[in-house]
Image (tube, rainbow, N blue to C red):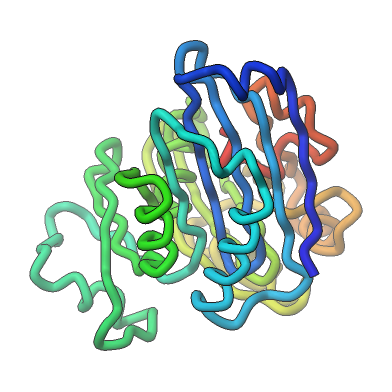
Length: 275
């Protein structure tokens, strides 16, 4: 079963504009996309498909995405450009000083189980002089290439870092991006990256353990530092409530995209895709 949330504005302009760009994000938990006007840089449309159960493999994800493309007429249009975000937890951040293209697999083998035929890619994050090495869902890339031709793609953690590092936080801030069974922690200070990692969790206690462990390692005072959430979390969620129990200052990232105000979901929910 797939649940769909859809928000549209100015449907006529979607049909006639030759300067629409398409941004896509997908994971084993869902698929979402937005259509933007490249002339005005404004979002015109957003759709989100949430899968009832986490899919077991990239092959199952491809089946879901193919079905969505076949039924959603907006995805059958021509676009000026395509941007794709791979959301998974098969990545490792490597400083430029230690990076070599000949040993990409070595960077992942410490924390990720890789297969011999896995395709390994990397994103250059110029602001922090580092590469994000990861395994994209190459079968999805191949399908999108057949549908649209050339496109750009990045890992979701790359996009998060690029967005967050622009924020002018003078003090240390912990950003937590929550997915269904995983979450990212990014800690910055004065536009410098201090920490980034991702964790899996099954219970709110698992979640809290990793947050507090990270805070302890970075010597963050739970009475003082600020934690900001984005992703699949609300004030009603148990992980929000337990976080507030242990950390004094918590809140949410607010999207700078005016279109986020049109959504039925909180602004921070689709931060990676909408910004």
